[in-house]
Length: 242
Length: 383
Image (cartoon, rainbow over all chains, first blue to last red; front, side):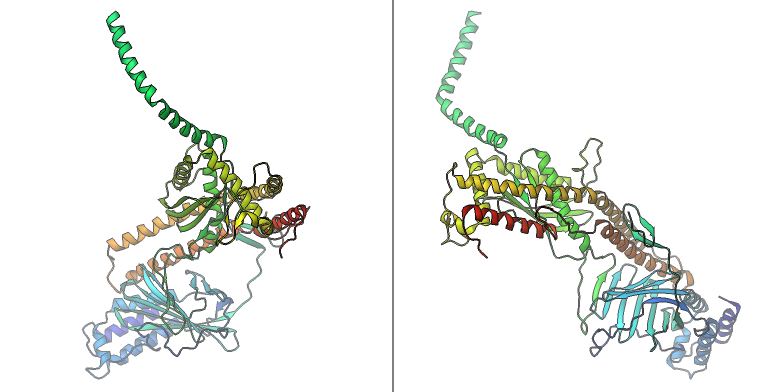
């Protein structure tokens, strides 16, 4: 959270106030997330060998990625515009439900969630694993299926392929929803990671788009094997484990 | 003094008369009882086991899982489910070995063997199916049949894990589910108590005949009623029949191979035991940790205002925690698989140059024995 971002939040609430009740459409600068389940329609193409190969090491390209400050400016501007929208519109009604703390919370949370400077992706026919620096590994063991839904007491999620895009959708406790959408550029050198975060306390979801480029990770001198009795056993490359 | 002596004499004579009348009955009872007790001591039977089979379960979780193909409903997984096929595969040989040590320790049986294939010459064949195996519960379906085809045991054994550590206990018998193995042993002992010496002799001879029939079937059709399906043994060769002696000699050669197989299975069990025990322990710890977390979440509501930064963080951290638990489970499974591979045991015999897995080599060894035997009898081997 920097001063720029806080300034815009304050600016918005100065204009809108807490008692505002004029509405309009979506405040998101990106397409809003559908509330329905992200299960693809019946016409969705079958999962095939045409799935893009995202495996490899990726580093964030800060130049091409969304600048969080600019993003938040746009986000706030959209909400401001909606404030001036004709009375009685949906957006005006939504404004009424806003409160400054929720907007600020969502923005701060989204900023932290989308840092992910390095991604390491491993992929095979059984699924895909996205190791994220600063966060847990996203895994989707889809096998020959298009989508996989997982349930837990802490939230439900759906992952899988929607045509050429890999999606992870999480519906968590407290009305929090997170969507990660991974898509590969035509030449396979850039990875687009679009993250949309929404909260039921804030009518407008926030979307951040980050771009990653491939990089060559230096080769490790050790190869390690995980065991139960001896934990991780490592050996110098080329020297067999005893 | 005299009066009391005569009273005692009267009482004794009364009992002596009763005893005289019942002496034949008592003698008969002692004979039968003695026979079975003696039989157990003098003619213990051998047990042949095969690796257990398992229910077709890929995951350890008992929650329902629905699956779908594309264009239908999405496949559903419950968090905490992991692919345990590598563990199940190891259990198929590990659990019979644990049972085998219990059977051996009972001292009731001549030999207890675990073979890669069905032992055609088994006196008692014990087969098992893993119905459920979690670190908390084990359910086995056990069936024991003697060489005549008589059912000795057919029962489902279930139990919960009981961690018992004793300084005096035999490390090989020390198992969280030892109570299940003890129950199986006791039931088998019980059903064998009724077998007299004659019955046991028949079982042993029939086992040998079964072995010979499997080895060179075309020669032994004379002993079979082939009008029945499957063919039934209708008569036995005489005890001093030279054919039986030859079969016994061949059988002895097979035991040489079985000893090697047995040694491999012992090594497998000894190597796997610490890993498997650790796996169960970690899984139990992980399960109780998840249970505690879920209960805690269900019992208390968030103290943070809905939509606040801390409420969002709390929600995400809980979810993150559950995902990390899944990853941890997967690491456990990976660690288990790394330490138990390869799951197929290779044997090498310089004389016959046997190759392949244990089951393949056992099959090959049997073919060699069959050829030797056919040559001795001067019969053509069936293709």
